[in-house]
Length: 374
Ligand code: NAD
Image (tube, rainbow, N blue to C red; front, top):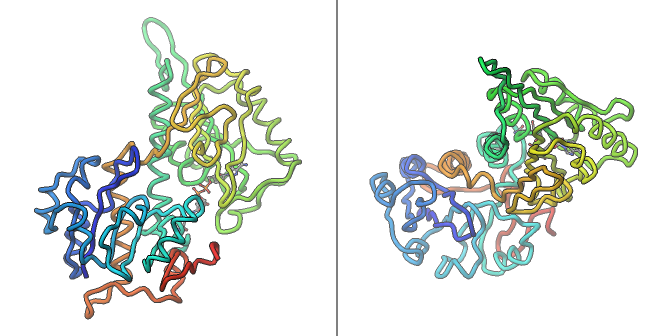
């Protein structure tokens, strides 16, 4: 089987779908690997590092020609896949709900496409879970971005010239990104508090040494929630949450929001009126900005200052840590391929009735097949 690794074309995408490490591992399985020249530039991986690992390195057309499996970070448009073999497979983060029309075109072009972000959250698939591997880095980077923009220090410092007090950091949404944000802010010496709608996160927050701030008057989501995910909350809950946030946020220096609800716009958690109560120089990082935003006034790809508070809304945060994000993402891809590798046939075989395969497959045999798309 010939596997192609493409150079990403989306704006500000610095990640790459294979590293020399995973190229070697794919070759050890029995595949041949072709890498598009420059694919690793954004992650500081040279063409020669890929050829030393055993890949051929060439232009896009030569890389695609004859390849049966194409690996990417973001989904390329079909127009970018000139000369692709009919029946070839494309595995990447394909954003099927935002790119619905392109998914139809993948199907019409006879491509089998698999969206890695739809990987089921089951134990067997943990090592293939790209949302977790990338969100973890986003949670870390959100705190570093906040620290960089904040005109004060995070830790308490007792000096001969007097004492500097510790920064107060409030993390809203305690999934994978939120947990890493709490841990990172704690390591920097901040006083950290956090909230979520899922009761199971309370213990996780406390075990990281942070204070859990929870709505008590109205019941949230018991335990983990369905599949570990939150749902839209009742109006009564939202009102109680808004009151809780209003009383807490005025005392915070840094707020990191990470709240998402699968298949829906991100919940609004911080209002303009609440931002106005924060001290000038405070910083908010809205990690949900690309899904509609948790914070009123956040802007994708910008950092407006509102009431003296900087609201950071970077797009594609994992790409800002491209080397680590690529290393983890490409291992996720390798683990996925290796799990379905048929040694004798020296190719990957995806049984249509496997839970993982069903979870990620968008198109097959000329049709859109994913249950959430048909
Ligand atoms: P996510 O990105 O969907 O959401 C981030 C967090 O925001 C979640 O904790 C969610 O409860 C919270 N949130 C949503 N609405 C909110 C609101 N109105 N107010 C406050 N918080 C709100 O979550 P995620 O990071 O993808 O993690 C979801 C779950 O999946 C977690 O329980 C995680 O431990 C679990 N998980 C399981 C596996 C696995 O078993 N393979 C892998 C990764 C994650």
